[in-house]
Amino acid sequence: MNMKRTLLAIAATAAVTGAWAQGGPIKIGLLATLEGPFAAGGADGMRGAELAVKERGGMVAGRKIELVKASSDAKPDVAVNATRKLVEQDKVEIMVGPLSGGEGIAVKDYSKTQPQVTFINGASGAQGTTLDSPSPNFYRFNTEGAQWMVGLGQAALDKGYKRVMVIAEDYAFPYSQVQGFMSEFCAKGGKVPVKAWVPLGGKDYSSVIARIPKDVDALLVVLGGADAVNFLTQYENSGGDKPMLGGSITVSQDVLNYRGKRRDSLVGTLSAGPVADSYDGAGWKAFVADYQKTYPVSAGAFPSPSLFAYVYYTNMKAALDGLDAVKGDLSGGQAKYREALQKMVLKTPTGDVRLDGNRQAIGTTFVTEVVKDAQGNLTTKVAKKVDNIDQLLGMKKEDFKMGTRDVPNCP
Image (cartoon, rainbow, N blue to C red; front, top):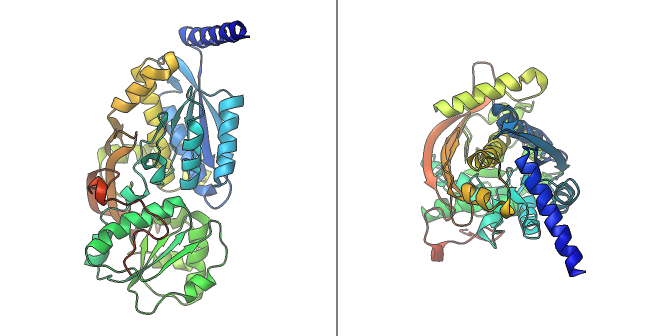
């Protein structure tokens, strides 16, 4: 039996080596959330990933890139099942995805059982994906939810918002966003008297709206996709008029382009995240132009690439740049490929990204303000750019606490 297993292993290794030597296609699994509350963002994430492949003509080191796509609905178990099919049945060699925070943690855990495959994040932004029990074959070239919020706490205080209520979805990514905001906001004297955690995919926000205290200066809303649209519509209908601070996904293009009266009242909303629509960096402007040319509004795309398009593009670009660095060689348990990923200084549309020891990105965040452009589209302009943000947000390790429902707390 042992001899049989050995012969099978030798045959499998020979097949992989032969495919590489002959310049066979490289199979990359691509997972995004195409159902549920983030469906519009997931579709744009797919566009971003495909754009990175298109830039290389669908080839790396003379080898064709074969994308094998799958969908989830923001549920961790669904994401793992879709990933399992891509890895165990479709036999992809590299995985890019998923989109949502809870999905990312689940796929990271699954990656530990599949050491022969290299996993690269899609857009998932929960801290715990790389900060808590990281996987040796899971890489994230995007900064995460807490890193995205650096600078917003100070911006809120500068605006005169000293007391803020949090309204956020009840899962890992919003915990990270709230932690990133509150760590700075509370340290500088701000107060958060109420946190309302709502279910992902919720439809009725009346009880949350009824809980908004009269004495808060603003609301920090960390809701994405359809959840954000539903809340904004119901808040408008209730006569609500508190100014808002937005989570990164709350002011992404997939939300800003919904149609409704409340949409216009988002003008002036401060937020923070890895992109700013009107950033004038040469790399960003080239990326936007390529996106708009490839995916026009008339075909269902957005006026500017969403956060999801940018982050999926970044991670797919990292996957392809790594392949280029090793000339498409994935032999030897992909050791050379993973070493190239770890050492890479990735050139992204918003600046250089490098990885820390947990294979987590260190990069740039923008504090932004929602404005209306000449065509009447809502867009985000740069209020502040912050570079080289690490996952501990500049804190000492002993002072840092990962975000949860109850941490941080400054009532």
